[in-house]
Length: 289
Image 1: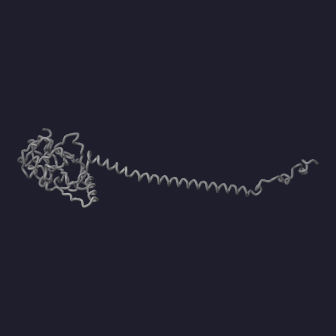
Image 2 (image 1 turned 120 degrees about the horizontal axis):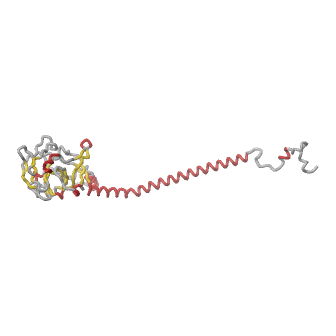
Image 3 (image 1 turned 180 degrees about the vertical axis):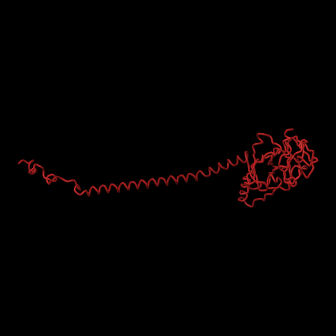
């Protein structure tokens, strides 16, 4: 019997023992080592995933920290830009003002805040009936001017200054009145009905004067308003210290146009008083002439 036939059974089929007699793969009969390798691979994969997540978390934390650091570095620059913009707007475009007195009641009440357009009179001329803010230095002496106490320390001084810039406190320097006469106009009071006349035309001022107020408690004029000057009056005529009361001062009661800060065009505070400050129809007849 040759060697090829030694391993064959009676039916010519190789015995199972002979078929399995060769070298066996480790763990091929039980599979335990294979499972161990799979388990080790799974653990290794989980550890890798955890490491990746930890790295991502560290990177995210690092980026967040970098953003916070960048914000604090940029904050001073943002503050400077905001201050520059506020200065530009306040100096040349628009400014809020606090109403400190009762001379413009009931159009404006004490504590009201108005916005003043500073650029409008660079584009066009002042019109009669407009409410304006101006500096009265050198031409007016108003005993009702609010006196601002001197700051006791630099911090309180800075706080007061900020309030004034925001229109949250009176400045003590500016006045607010209504334009009655323009350069070249003749103003006087009064006709038979106690009305103020501009260029001979009586003004019907009932719509904006303080309730129950008469047009003027003091007679004046006729006065011709000089070149570059304005005749101004408050809406609460009984208590307003305006052009009528300053006739003995330089300008004869008028105010130089170059002292005008701008036009008060809207009330912004309080909200229940908010609204525009438009030109009343009382001046339409004068304007048409």
